[in-house]
Amino acid sequence: MSTFKPNALRRLSTVLSIGKAPMPAPAGVSTLASFLSKAKEDYLSDIRATPSKGGKWTVVMGNEAGDLDSVASSIAFAWVHSEIQKKPCIPLIQIARDDLNLRAENLYALNLAGIDKPHEQLLSTTDLDGIQPFPSNTFALVDHNRLAPSFSAGNKNPTVVAVIDHHEDEDLYKSAFPRQIEPAGSCSSHMANIYPTESEMPKELADLLLCAILVDTNGLITEGKARPVDYNAAASLIPRSSLRDTIHATALSSLSKDSHALFSLIPEVKQLSDTLDAKKSDVSHLGAWDLLRRDYKEYTFTLRWHPSAPSIKAGLATVPVKLKAWGSGGRLEDAAQRWMAHRKLSVLGVLTSFRDNSWGKRGNGKHRREMAWFVRDGTEAQTLPLDEVAARLWAGVEANREVKVTRHKKMELAGVPSSVRARAYKQGNASATRKVTAPLLRYIMEAEADPEPQTEEVPTPADTAATSRAGESS
Image (cartoon, rainbow, N blue to C red; front, side, top):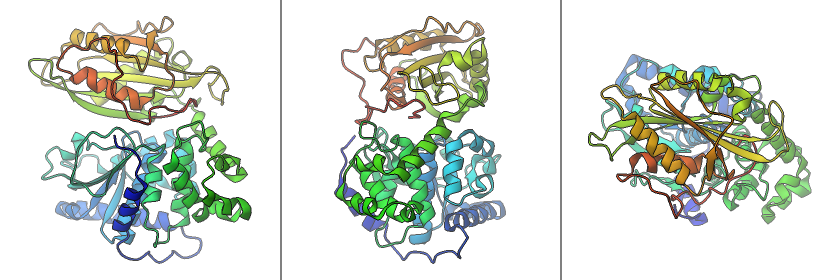
């Protein structure tokens, strides 16, 4: 992955600055909410009346975890593309409508941005149930950089025209423009930094992007995930946000001095960050099934080492609570089997991130991580070499010096059927997030040779030195 280039962001800002800023909405009406409701109504009307009309739209989406960064980034991109560039664009939230309730921090941030009926105002996968193939063929990707197969299957000439992301670069869509895949604590920081400087940003959009940055960087604390790009973005957003009217003028003027420590010292910023963190951390009302689907990402791998080279689906679910607190007594095994059958998965990894005393409240104990893995035959056309896949997975994970796992003696995962292989680990490196585990899993599944004990770490993004805050979702 390349390093952060401020000049590149400025060039992209110039490209995105076509046209004039839209007229402000009447007082008391959320500009952003009105835009989203109208875009959703028009898009659904087009594809239902004349499916071919979907071709005039660019569909922008974040990743399928549906976290606040993905939601905010996709909304921001759609606003710029539609309201400034004057080209039809609709943000698609890659989760089911009912799943919007699984993330309290999302609902809080959306409400701050005037999007108080997100189930009605946002286009979700539920709105497109039963429509095959996907009704549009022009896509923009934010907070990830690989188009999922479900959007290209049977779709004539699917084209990714833009990519803005902060994860590992999978080296695709080289002709996309903008194509900005750079390290950052939050993808929303990239969106804020490329926003056309001569166009007015709606206060609600500034609020939404700022909330996403605060969640992803743990309040912009200096010892966390935040990078210069995140501080620069926050400095540009705060004067445009609703915080502008409450922050002391001296603190507001100091933002231009690029003092990284300043952000966490501004009471209003810290209060907003603490509120978002509290809402994100409290998942005590969710059962095992909800926890697995709350922060979930899915991948397709080709097993090149096998003679028939089958393709399989794998999923990674990040859960901000230790395994025994919610998965003991067979609850994890039961929920994992249901979820794998529902998603037709061959491999499921459950990645926990928590503090020792964090169940239903914000704990201050030591940060820890665990892994639970399940392997089953999720393929339809052929039988998966179950024991071979499981053996490769165990060997690859146990040999990796980045995650540093040991067997989890208190989670034996005995409650699985004979057709499933399962194993749980404690993770020695609590800073190794899903941004480490996802590339590792791809390497294990797709490497043509058997995984060997590694003397060097699997290549991972430059920003994998992650926060040690419980509940971190990447």
